[in-house]
Length: 517
Ligand code: BG6
Image 1 (cartoon, protein in one colour):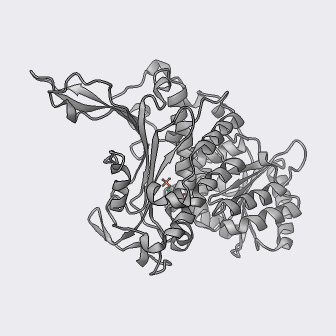
Image 2 (cartoon, protein in one colour; image 1 turned 30 degrees about the vertical axis):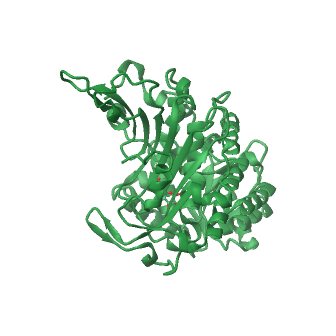
Image 3 (cartoon, protein in one colour; image 1 turned 180 degrees about the horizontal axis):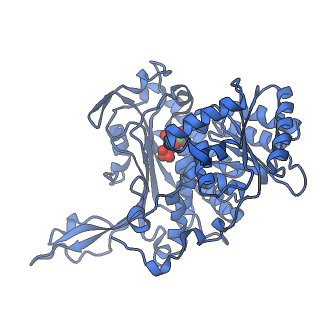
């Protein structure tokens, strides 16, 4: 167990530079205000920031959607959402009353340019009455097919530009950003026609997770790990995002997406890039993002004809998790009985650069797996010569450093130790750091961190236009390859198992195994 050096930590809120800054007053627009993301994530995060006094004075939200609501209906909907997703008490009392004062609503037909004029008028009113000074944060929590129309219409009524040279206007765009290389580049062109790239914040909530940010600190603030963080010492890396949930009522979206688009193109490639980047020249947004793009450019593309060798997909059929019988994917609401959408995917990537030459990166993600767990596990090469070969040392496992993204956030180092006794026998043991026991406090939700960063103008944890295109450049040929293979190929796995057997073969062919999690 790793314990915290109490002298090393003074007031955690005063640590670092970011928390010392408070955002300038601003108004935030949420497009998709009656949707699920607003209720589950965005509003609970804003409320938590408000409660911790991290929002600027007068902070206001203008909810925007096609639902015919008045401001009071919006406030009621948010009150219910906070009661459900934060706590029943959150939506009561003076704190809620004061938060609710800053919530406004505008019904809007996203595709109708005329209704944006009404939004512009309400914005002016709110900016004046609440003293938000004309700074604007636009959050697009809408289906991707609407993004083009929204940015265009915002541009038409002048809402894409800062009100004065002293003001700022920024836009957060949710994933999925495009559905392949061509649509993503086209979308970038449209967005960049109305918003300068420095105004655009493409969000990937995995980058806001405390544990993902800690990968950079772990690598670049500690003397002992960086020298061995390369192909000389590392045998291979496994990145896993396993979920027990199914598609949770999002069948229609998931049918269009599948696991490769939903998790690998964004979350897991982002995590991979953080684990692999070269030390940036500073911790400034552009320096970090410049290094990330180099990683994406160095990942060897999996060509359509290579998908059989480097990828595995699967779809869950009925099964049991925690004693509960669950239906198969094809029986989920809004899913076709003939669906061939993948709910599991595993890929083997190589990064063709000096640091990572020859090191395989096995990346997997799936729904309805036995356990919810996300981690990066780095397996080190075997020692060059084993001294203890006649003492069951053959069973000694390789050293593994695993960074647990969630749950049970922490870092664990596995190494061999002598089993007490008269003979030399080796047993693998773990040295563990757990956030919960070392720091005691719960990490803030990723959305809180990212929304605040955007208000502060810090784009480090957001995705730049070139990165999003590069990741699609890697993913699109895989989809093409699967199409060539034909859909009869899609293997099944029972809900509650670790994906199809083909996924094990991907590693077994290389003499390796997936970690048992
Ligand atoms: C979302 C995906 O981006 O991430 C979901 O669309 C997935 O399908 C979710 O369940 C996982 O996020 P987390 O934070 O629960 O690991």
